[in-house]
Length: 86
Image (cartoon, rainbow, N blue to C red; front, side, top):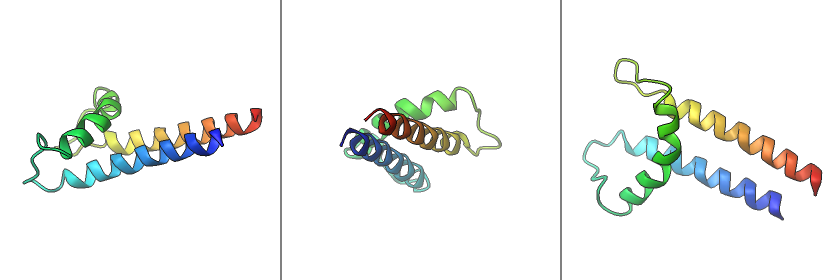
C-alpha cells in the first residue's frame, strides 16, 4: 500500500510538471492568479534545482526534461526499494 501511494504521488507530481511545461507555451496565462500560482509554486521548487544547473540554450529550457527523467528514476528506485522491504 505504501509503495502504491509513493508511486502515485511521484506520478502525479510528474503530471503537474508536464502541465506546467505545456502551459508555458500559452503567453497570456497569468501566473499570479490561482490555480496557476499554486501550480507554479509547487513545481518550481523542484524545477529550479535543474534550472540552476542547466542554463537555457537559445531561449529553450531543457531543464524540465532532465527533471522529469530524474523524477522517473527516483520513482523506480523508491518503488523498487520499498517493494523489496515490504
